[in-house]
Image 1: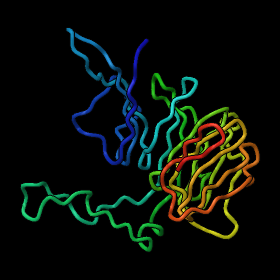
Image 2: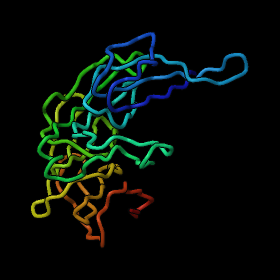
Image 3: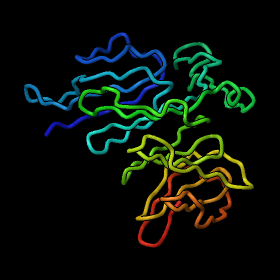
Length: 232
């Protein structure tokens, strides 16, 4: 069958990129889809579709023919221009994004989860403004009819993909820190790390904490579960 590459991006789509199916010419971000094709003995990525505009598109997960992607809603304003290696003062990498919480938190927006037809890019539904906070490079996990995502606002959400609404929300009662980690899953548990130096294990049906484990540093990476052990 056809192999696909789905690429989320921030900011305006390149003026040089065009696809047969375009649902918008995004200015804030979106998803570009390519088909992997062999032509005249060489492999190439052929543009297939371009999504609607999204507020800084992040991770894409495909399940059951649906491409799930979230818009981070983070303030990604560049306060300093990039400089190439051969420019005076260069190289300066990363656009000088100000990571200061005073500026970034107050002007960031909110996460939106989108469900797109994986073959055409057509929007099937979105979470709208159901999620109050934004996120910063958080991962998206989709399984068993639910999506799991953490936010910068000390919240983990379990979203029912049939009802298209949050089934539960989890916040630690004492330690209020962002979640960068993607969730790892077992049959009935959701495990992820927080910047509060804790590994959180939640009931996947209710979002209630089964246990937490205190580490010696922030947990920004995503856990891996092997047997009855969690590695971070």
